[in-house]
Amino acid sequence: MVMATRTKKGDLHVVKPATTVNEALETLVERRTTGFPVIDDDWKLDGLVSDYDLLALDSISGGGRTETDMFPEVDSTWKTFNEVQMLLNKTNGKFVGDLMTPAPLVVREATNLEDSVRLFT
Image 1 (cartoon, helix red, strand yellow):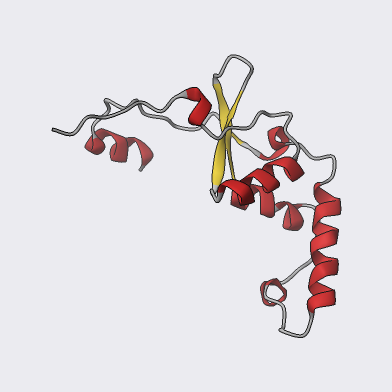
Image 2 (cartoon, one colour):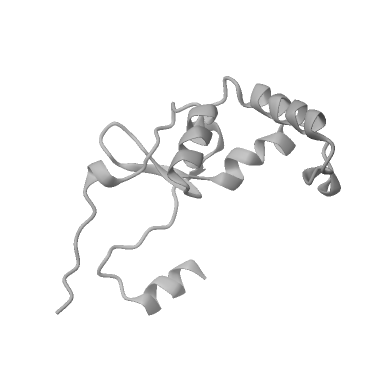
């Protein structure tokens, strides 16, 4: 017999709209996750923020990088370091609430898979 366990609030990795992008990026790396639910003070879902949202800030803020620039050459450590520093400077003062996807589609745990797929497609 398999028993399902509920996830407790304390076990969830969440951020708030006022969380800075830098804090969210640090937590993303520490937790090895790809995103977070964004909650308000009453634990109601405000939105979702993903690694893509946080890292796409570079292109949103006019980084001007091309796809070939994304992967530096082996000997370009100093150049890579400077690019990372520029990205961090662009995220300074930005908040998760500015980048999150608001009002995400959600399903309850009792929703069957077929209905979930239909909703998301």
